[in-house]
Image 1: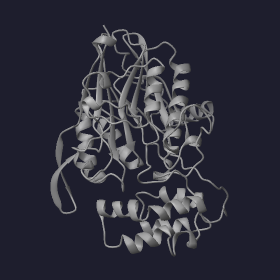
Image 2: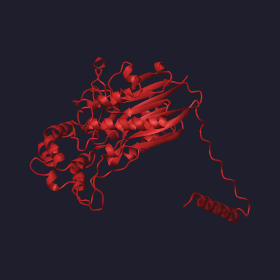
Image 3: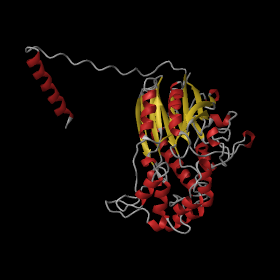
Length: 423
């Protein structure tokens, strides 16, 4: 129904109700809408927080049990603008949004949209039974070799003992392999039934196609939107949120993203990499994809932000080697690209520590290097030398799971906070 028709219909109903119930008097005037909060003025600094909160059900331990404490602690944040990553499930998004709505009345989240390799009501099954079961087949390997194991022990078994079978599946039936790996967090039996159902399209992405990013702000948005990078993403949907806010009469541009991770330890790359030629020799397809996404995002943000103060936040899944601080490299070309485009990384420059660390209780059994994957990049900031930064959420909290109570970190990442003087 058109807006004008809807307004006219409502007006007729109001007049009719007044005549019948109120003896023909004039209808009561509509209440005036509450004015929006004024654009903030006299703000001395802009306080920014980026935090990958690790709500990857079925992948990062105790996601459900950590959520209430996460929401409670985020409510205590003194940041003006938050960029959150790995909020994969719609119900988790709703929980966090409800918890923060009074303190952060303005928020946006990345869309949830599944993508498929094949379309149509009868696309054929993503996997045939013989793709998964039989000698040297992936599911049969899990059922036989990894039977009786659980948790990290089972994960190691799958990654080590069954990896050759998964790599063979990628070569034999890439659609099947991709949909199989995208089933992370799902019930195993239901996942296999879905994969072998000829009436179910082959899903490309985990968590129903969620991107998992959210921006929360104390300031109203002047504009906001989303850059879709699903066509150059593997296993997990990727993209970038953006918004601009007016502070002290000046517009500031904010980006929030979570780019492709280096999953080579747990998942072979099952896609065509964006770059097939060029000077950079990528470590693997995951790095190739991450580099493409970084360039795409920076190009788009340059058009939108222009010369405005710009803050790019998120888990970029890239880390520049800094052995003086115990930080290892991962996808270095991507991080260096941002710096080459004129951005600064205050936290990395100011006595940093890893944000993906072995001292995190959720990573105690991890064999991955310690890295600084989480960044808040700044550009067109006038008082760059006065910017301060800090690491956040390094404490443990008491949670209950599997019939026991113990101390756990809130996420497998630590957060990064940056304070930018505005005067």
